[in-house]
Length: 190
Image (cartoon, rainbow, N blue to C red; front, top):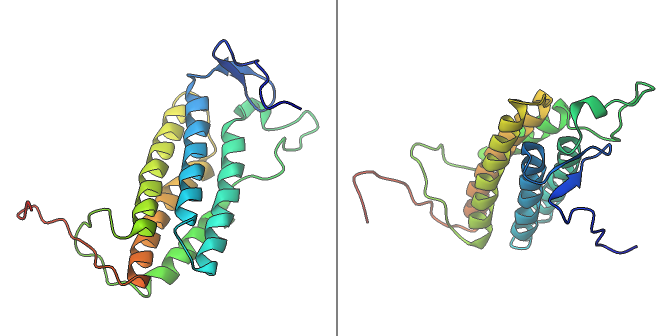
């Protein structure tokens, strides 16, 4: 099977379930941004050595594929005629709680946050801050989609929580590497 199909040469693509839409549609923008986040997360993983963290990040990449496949499926196509879900997996409260539990564990070792911090640190922390901002963009694109087509609330909640996770993990990775956080002080411009 060839990787190129030529079916999208005129600027449209097939969603999961067969519906064809413009590549500029809000649904394609949403799942495309989720895919972009997954790619940035792959880069972040290349900068992290701790096996426990890599295991979490691999699970998140898996969840992002799950979230992306649901985002690529029109709501009216999620359920088959026999009443079963078209998708083998869907994001649920379980995945959201998992992110919360991981963050709670990281925060046990972190100083309480009293100021805004500047994104940065070593390569691992910086790449996680990039993941955080791309995750926020993915969340915005899903919110935009939700204004015209229904999106299950768990998807929005997952991305919101995931961006928090990336922020806390960036702080935790800096802590493990003994990198000082740089605080934003509006009175100190350099």
